[in-house]
Figure 1: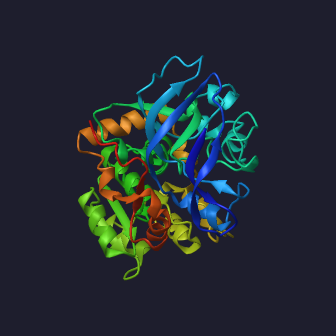
Figure 2: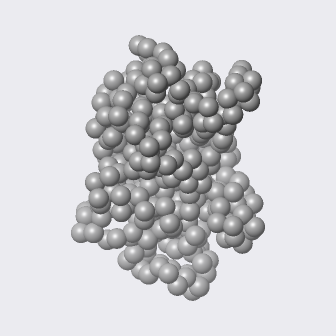
Figure 3: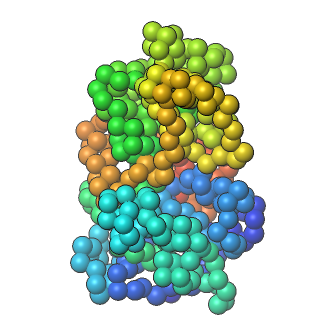
Length: 371
């Protein structure tokens, strides 16, 4: 089947819309999905510019939402017409998957970041030539084929255009708090960086009952939004020392938890230094040349630093949970979003990189409206 897709032809190249891309045939456990919309994530930009590589040319996108058009012969939980959010793939058979930790799937890298489908075959080709995929999904397309384990069914009365980022950015931020840090009511948290991941981590802290939810950023407009979404205090770290201010706000102790979403080495250190005794810092952004200069502080203060992949999420559990919080008005993720036409993907990505837009969402199927 020929589809239209946004292709990055070489390292650092722009997204080029092409309508001659050949989509792989479905397997027995696969779904064919018509993409309605897809978020743009900073991971897409990292691969586009070459900080990480799946091989070029490549079709990116991994925050897709769409409608099931076909189901494989062994698919039992999905039907034609179902609305779905797409997320990462896990094999479901390794020891970590069976323990309920699919983000630590033994085949995670092979299945999501090798540029090939989980079975080792091409997902996309052009004139018979290989094109790399992403997350066994590649949602910068008009249609894609995914394994049923990539998909999460959602209610048809929801606006499908808004939901794609639940499969990565939103579940990463919130899952880091819900699944890994697991704060108790009355504890405290500070989030460094108020992009889509940071704001959803912050909202998860609020939902968990943290009495102080402190947002740290250098952009006043984002801090204003953080306040609207539930931050108890905000700090512009361009104007004041966030470590000192966090200590002032917590009787000199520091916070129980911090989340760094920036990947900026000095900011990551501030996240560690803002911890109280026994506190935990979750560092969840990809970063280059990271150094830690306060190992003694970790030992003497019993602080911990953890890395978290995809919020330790089980998408089929976590995405529906986030939607329920959204319905209750407790998780207003859509306030971070701005819609763009698929043809404007390069502008949308540029707005994401510059920080002008927190979460760009490409509307691939403009005829699809909420039911």
